[in-house]
Length: 244
Image (cartoon, rainbow, N blue to C red; front, top):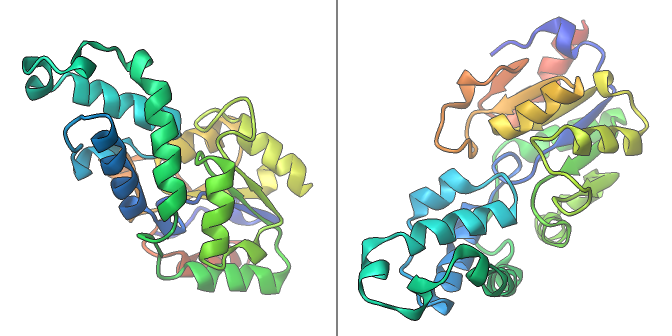
């Protein structure tokens, strides 16, 4: 969809989300979480639920899935020891097992989306500063970007544990703009979900959303944005057209 020129005509830097925006990481999440649930003697979590829960950080992901699994009738009905435990009681063990499994497979079941490299190369050739801002833990994000050979394009990488608050809070965007040295109104946020959009709107940052990512099971076109793109390969042309 054509962006609003008033939103994108003065862009001097770009912030990219990671999961669901640049890299299709659902397979990594599924494998790590299935192994985590097995370690806890819980039934496998559905892949659909994993996809709907991605995006608000690993703590939210694990707590949400634990609550769902502990409430399942087959868990409550068989008298398993874990069924009597709360999410809080299981969380620390679940987090350690999840970290262990995710670190082992990070990037192995993930693919860079078509069009991402073309956009990054175009912006790099223009000398446009770029940062990656994700709710994924920083160490996982850095390793994934390196695994997929995307790390050279980013002057800064920030994760969900880089600041005291995560998206959809605007603080991470404000701090990323500060690191880039570009005013927030001249920095574009590129994401895949309402999480990214809410953070950008609250920060006063223009936002473009991709249509193929993880938006908690909702159509991303229902979320206000300057543009909704089917591929990031369209983004450099959008910015050129807006600035014409």
